[in-house]
Length: 305
Image 1 (cartoon, helix red, strand yellow):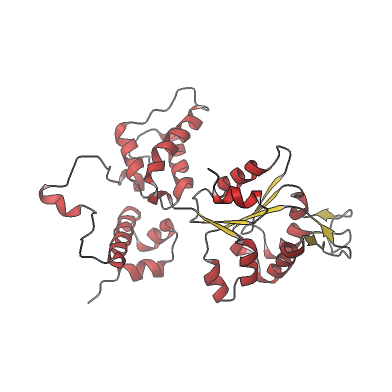
Image 2 (image 1 turned 90 degrees about the vertical axis):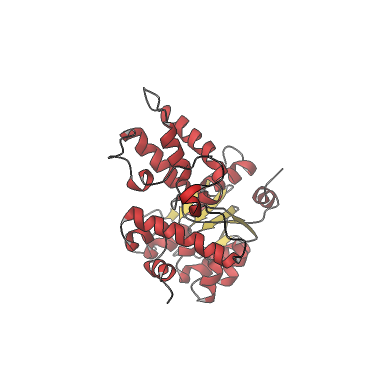
């Protein structure tokens, strides 16, 4: 059965992929491209957060010769033109400078671009996929992102769940990454049961990207507890030992039937935050590891009188 993204691209609609950093948005975009494209069709990935604001227009739209001091004498086509006939993937779309959003919106509406210093618009035929870890609607309310641009980009929204919410993927990903790593090793890497359990129990604030990073570290450092990241080695392995009993039974994460959904979510968030503070040693470092600001950590750990 086709996914909503596959159906959307087949019908010429635009797709936006949303989710936390590291959940695999680029891989999903490449999959969608390969589903609808020929092997020779270009896939141009643009990290909007990595382009300086002063260069954004020239990088995306290109420029004509002599357009500005330092321009190439023959001019330069932009990344949109480079994607002609294929897919333009705009990653971190929420980082596009506000003044450039109007020009991007114009291209999405009529398929025409105008290079810097140019006078003749050019038609470019591309599929557009975008991705973000930001709340674009909230940004629109703060007038940091154009609402009309959001609706042009988000014909179909593909939200990606963080790895901690889909633990059933862990075994598959661990095996897949292990296979990739062993292709570059003369002696195959094998994980001990204990380390495998720790990998399965970890919360992965960095999502799939963090899992791959940890697997690479294990490949290089082995299973030396003094060398591997403390956040992983401090994780208590989950084992299927049946119902909790005895003096530690109150640590069972099963929610109290009398709790509201808001209370359950708050308790779960607090447990993750407290684990991160214990592992990383401070609230500031925990905030960085979880991808939130220090104010969020302070607010959620504040003890009510």
